[in-house]
Image 1 (cartoon, helix red, strand yellow):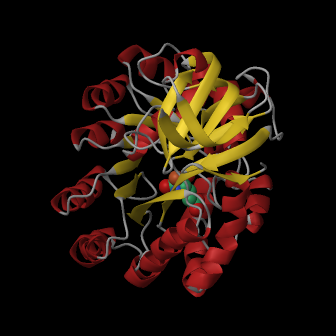
Image 2: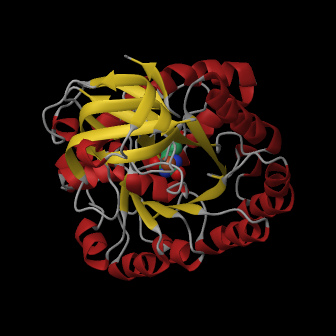
Image 3: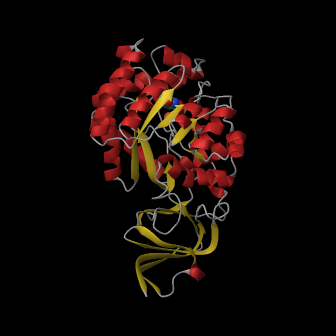
Length: 408
Ligand code: DI6
Ligand code: FE
């Protein structure tokens, strides 16, 4: 007799286990968990004999997927940019606004002025919207401080969000997001300060799980990004990159060269960049919310990603400037509609591949024994419904580390 804490039965599973085809569908499934970890996920008929549980939950034939993972967000910031949205509606471009002192810099001002408490309060409704859709792991970046104190407070706020809500938070230091206004024209000086002081301090305080940079004409060059990545490597932190979003600076190849966990956006990445990512095992994170919101025309090279066997994740990129989006389900719909990802790619992109992009696939992202029991239970008839609808939330219940936490 094996005794476990909880069993979910009478359910259909999309396990996303890499050893299975497609979504890893199991029609009559069962999940057993103890101490917040999955001990069995598979066909009910093949469950260990004599399985006994303190609690048995009849899922009523519903579908269970791994809890969703939003692997690229800028969730913590002050203010918003609705006024710039209006300017863009009147004809200004995102890059024009950035060059005229708006854009990221206007959010930097509002973020510096906010207390840590205010940053948390502002981010909570955004986080709650994601949690309500079944998100159990979220990545949150800094990058709206651009000086040590505010970058630190953003990351502290992100960590705190993971303490006050039932969700796993992974933090990323994005000090190299743009040049701070007080150092305009001196990006070399800023990168020196970042590598010399900010990054070592943040790493020393254990506030960042990874390091990111915005490699772009309006932000940092390949050489500057290389400097940041070299420092991150020295400090033992994995890297990721905002790469080839608005132009092709060959950021994808640079990310691959550093063995980055992911390269994100990638609209302008070329075949060589994609091939290098495949070789390095760097995950492509596509961000259709930003593509949509700034009305980009250049599609990311999805066919090349498939051809080279690059793993594809998707995320909201939730941020005030280019993707004020707090729905991962809508990001899935956009990835399908705008980028022509398949249903299976969208669901894998918000679970298994997103876990890979964060380097946490050993812990979550699929329904497999040994992993954290992070589940999303859905009122749907087929998995395609998760991708097909717009602005509708079919979540029935969410389980984080074995505990049912909402809509039970
Ligand atoms: N790329 C983006 O799309 C966001 N950051 C980045 O590096 C934009 C952030 C903002 O405009 O506030
Ligand atoms: Fe981003």
